[in-house]
Image (cartoon, rainbow, N blue to C red):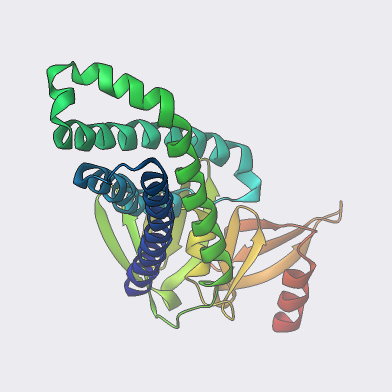
Length: 264
């Protein structure tokens, strides 16, 4: 949990710096333009510029939390992409709505007109900007999670949320994880927890020396493997100590090699 909060803080911090740079560049461009035309850069323009980009920094927290729930898993790539496509549209609508509120407040001249008219005008001009902002945040978050936050933190407890409840599971008690549709079942010694967190996200929190991804839908704890069986068709199954039979993907050669070494 602490590690996630730290990564979230880092992402938001970097986003703030990027937003500050972009807004400063645009401010410089506007200042240069006012020097050429002889106009003065009004306070309202400064407020709009920094608050408009600042809104994105605040909303980025929601974007990063949403990405944690729906990371890009190559086995569900189409589904996750569609989820984020819809979410990016919703984000753009909200972002432009908040930007319109700011614009409406700092520009008294617009208060004589309908707010809906202003919002429609902002959407026509800045809808694409909101979509671009969202996907920049998602791509950055995906890259950060893959290349920066890939090492096991050494924690002995796995935090799993299930319908508003938070379960603290001892790593040594977890037998295996199974994914199905939008859920992942975490089976421990004395309980089973169902969570909407992705298998990829959960796997990153597990000790790689104890847990193996034997299939796209299964991660097992070595300590709870009872035996390895090979069927007549050449398929390999793992039998867990609770008698559950789990198939092993033939393409995961490294997992098979490690298991064979462990059990021989």
